[in-house]
Image 1 (cartoon, one colour):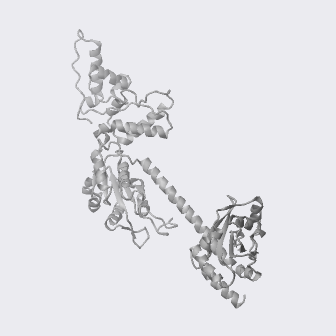
Image 2 (cartoon, helix red, strand yellow; image 1 turned 135 degrees about the horizontal axis):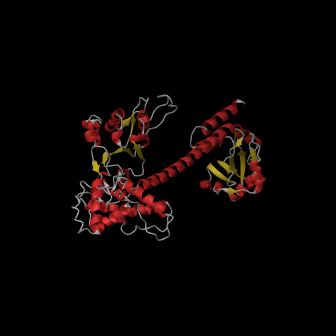
Image 3 (cartoon, one colour; image 1 turned 30 degrees about the vertical axis):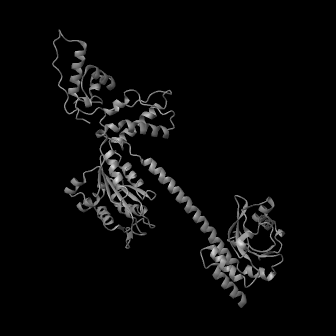
Length: 523
């Protein structure tokens, strides 16, 4: 390679490989090549083996609005497909086409462009025996190119192949990134749906909770959700996130009680490669994944002491450090915590840090148990029946049997809303084989244990004893022996050898109080 060729190669390569943006690279190369050969434009085309068509990747030109190459992807004929797919996978000299219809593929593209009077000079970049496409320069008029022009363009095979390969890889990365972002948006919507972004009872039993959600959602303040297991703390957390300016950002849920103590730091804050045995690569923790969004720390009272210290730092400085790392990582994050434990009592026992408690308890929301809001039972029941029936593909959606809601209202619901959801799902499973139109019935429920069973009346004398009095007396004796429990292995129904539903019906008929009717204060 003589001095001219070396200078030409070096200057052209600097321009082709001097920018990650392919249009910028081609534009710089185009203006340099103007001094060495006829040229009105330079372009890259690629072949899609699935669609069997040729499309343009990039083009620069000094012609009016690039009109000469403004064509849609060109469908190829079987002859053109065979030509491309059997093209030798080895670099060769740039091909001169002073009349474009001299080559089968160029002829199709030329016709799609409107048959302009142009000359083409084609270079086929090949990397690792894979043909990437074609780089071509063009000039207005026929018979513009000579062998010397082909020789110069052939010198640029390797830099053009590198730029072409990088461009194709970048396009694939962009495509996959957009696909991932779209999948993430879809999955986020699905997770919000599954978690439940609708607060059932917002106008009745949870009206106060809903108002507090409305007040705090637009802010970035910490929220502490309090309540028994199964009352719907995750639903409230999700509602806060969905009503906040962070609604389209990540919503990351962490069950603090489900992570082993030895892994809690790594799971929450991530780790650097080599931080401990088995840390083969860097890992982002849940806090980093929630950056710009919301992190929901469920069962916060289960955090071990060392994790409480690190969480306190996050709340104070909005920074974390990965395990084994030294540089702090700034975060823009909102923290919603939840617990079914009495954190204040845990602080007094030394089981929970007082300073962390103060930081978390900025805006506490107490979610009442289901037994304390029986007014929401009909709406919750209808919601879960419709939702579960849709999931199970049950059509038409069954309606509760007469008296079923009354049976539900007498239950104490120790498992709260989650117990109701599971009960309805179980009832629908049993209902699947029922004839169409059959009302939905629920499994028998334990009656709440009364605080003090009623005292049985004295047994009347044999001369005045009738059947109802005898049955009433036996039921009272059974209730007294079982502490007021109707159902179960140790319940009055088992003691009397009857079905619990039969016993309840008989008690109603005889006016024997049980459950809520025994003690109106039981809710």
